[in-house]
Length: 201
Image (cartoon, rainbow, N blue to C red; front, top):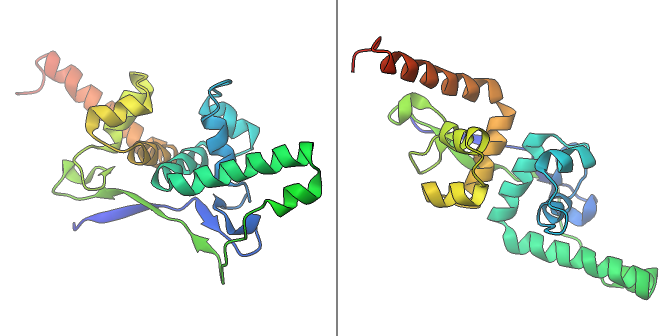
């Protein structure tokens, strides 16, 4: 099998929707709303809480963060514009707030913002999904995050990944948990048999 990239297609832009900004497919919820909550150090909501707050799925929330770390300056500017809008709305009124809004992004048609962060190759871990361009498996990231409770930043440092790659792996996992969990459980099974001397070294 040649290298196959597994696209994560959960974010898009549409003409006339949210000024052409990046939103969750099927929701119209701007990516920057999720990111702003995630970066809120005063409250530090969990990603599960953020998903519940916006009636979003966990794959969408993780994909939004992966998109953010691939397009950080864009989303940071949107967050700053939203904060300015809210400040002006409360201090100077709606006219000043509306006047502060950046011009809309010009689009002729909807654009899916695919995340190409995961790939498979039979020459690498028997075709197990990996972070594209590396030998780090999605399963490795999930074990570190879910079972060892390692922070995404520390996972990125441990495996020499970007935060976009880490959150992309977790978005991929939350879209396909059964597949990745089966891989993790099978490895546990083999390890137990090896330790019991039931599998030849």
